[in-house]
Image 1: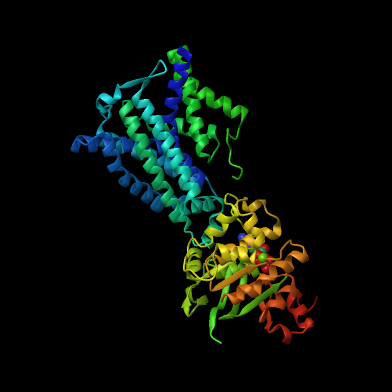
Image 2: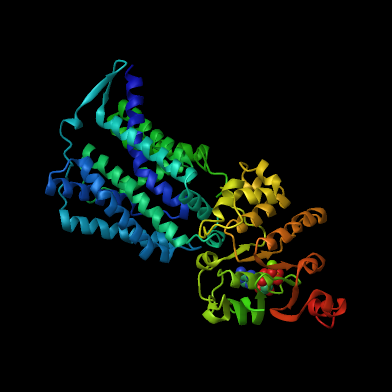
Length: 287
Length: 236
Ligand SMILES: Nc1ncnc2c1ncn2[C@@H]1O[C@H](COP(=O)(O)OP(=O)(O)O)[C@@H](O)[C@H]1O
Ligand SMILES: [Mg+2]
């Protein structure tokens, strides 16, 4: 029974990693851009929610909803005025620019909020739990996983049921031919990054409510996100969820064996999947 | 006849390489014009310039009296110039029907063409509507590419080598659509290497060689020899 519990805790933890990863996966899937500042943007989102909660006394969930349009605008502007200029056949310039952005964000957050670790207070919710079939499940982990599911299902609906989703896929296939359909690839990229920032805000909400954060923790979130995306197969949204779950389960199982192994076990799982299936579990047919 | 689409002294280059040298071309309202020429003559470069994929000075291309040479492809398309690109270029992530639907993304003016009328034009596509576009035969893929361009109810339809790589009987099938497309009101520019097909549907023909227009006129007025010389060069 203890193992079942460990694995279920791991699956639920995987929801958090999937939330970290979904925005990264979306952006990579559409424009082949790896945003090295992704983790720092999550931390930025957490500070924005914290600021709103502190200043207005709003509940963290309402504060996150208020933050979403601002984060969308930030992502849209970031893509339109900065990243679109460096996107091209050469993959190095976008990596350099987003790496620089990561450093700038960390330092700006340090200036603005100091190195003290913070937390978004969620009240009794943070310790609440429910009993299911003899298992004690935390409400917060359940909500995290539920949100990850909603995000992945929502993105899939967007991709496969809407005209914007068709434009996303067409632009991902071939931006030049997409422009012959009246699609403006630069505008599509800006919308995609804006949507990714909405998901980043959801990830930030749970990151900030579940654990302490400070300006320096972004890069480690990026690593988890990146591993989840790679495990799942580049560009596959369901794969990203599976990737998050695999890292989550590896971490909780590792921790159950020896608490010091938690982080290491997640990275090992990543390496093993990469060795066995270099293209991830659910690679897209077309790259 | 007033010009609907017109180029004046149009040039194009890829880096240091100049691919078009002062091309003057006119397409009248309701007209179908063929552009023929050997491989590498610059036909695709001309189509890419007309559709906005390659940018130019504003007045080197005029559409409906307005300089459009400097507009990006998405804005040119929104004005009513749709392209069937060389090699079909279907979107592999999209089904047949989605490939058709996306053809109207940037221009939703309404008009004769819709999913229903495109399926009437190419009934086989309706049966295969849920297949990935790239799972179809070459001829069917070409039908999707044509249907996709028609979905925007274009005023000008640019077709770049729609017979490329297809069997003669399939080419004949596809060319059967041309009169129906013309009847819907679209003016057409049809690029071909294969002289016969293009001459049969065109009101006027332009021959291209090495980035220049070497001959133009109505198909009946041009002798085989003149075309041969314009196509391959006088020495050939
Ligand atoms: N992307 C490109 N970069 C450099 N040169 C090109 C490119 N595309 C075409 N060319 C050159 O431009 C000339 C005209 O090509 P193209 O317009 O494709 O001719 P056509 O369609 O008549 O076969 C050719 O010499 C070709 O090699
Ligand atoms: Mg060509």
